[in-house]
Image 1: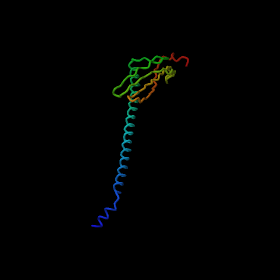
Image 2: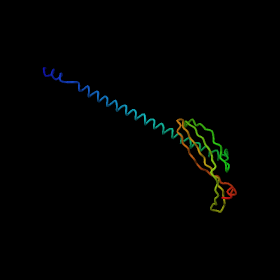
Image 3: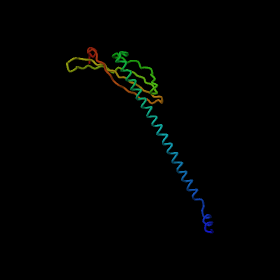
Image 4: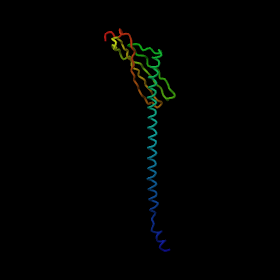
Amino acid sequence: MNAMLHYKKSQQGAALIVGLVLLLVLTILAISTMSTSRLEVTMAGNNQYAENAFQLAETGNAVVFQQINAGQIFPIPDADLPQTAQINVPDLGGAYQTQVTWAGNAGFTDEYGTDFCQYVWINSSIGTSSRQARTVHRQGFWIVGDPDGCAGL
């Protein structure tokens, strides 16, 4: 019994200090993991907003080409079309804006010897997401016209 009392007196609380140090290390590790997770969630969200801006710009291009094919927009050689107002697309959480710019004309002859003139424009579509992620897409198109329009080329 005497030996047992002597053993208890010799302990100085080292287990408590080791336990507190381990808890401190685990707390720091947990905080670091939470901060990394929050950063990854933010990065994933930003990627989604950038993708929405990309889709909005593509939508702008598709709408312009659909309107040209339907005869609702008439590009005129040597002229730019006015820039459209921003068009909101709630499903994608943003808006797009387009501008059709005259790029020039070029004459060519097909394999049958027929002369053509192609009138070339560039459609610029800007997609902007709700978090101001922005994408610009430019896509060219041409319309075959009267070969006399390319006189002097």
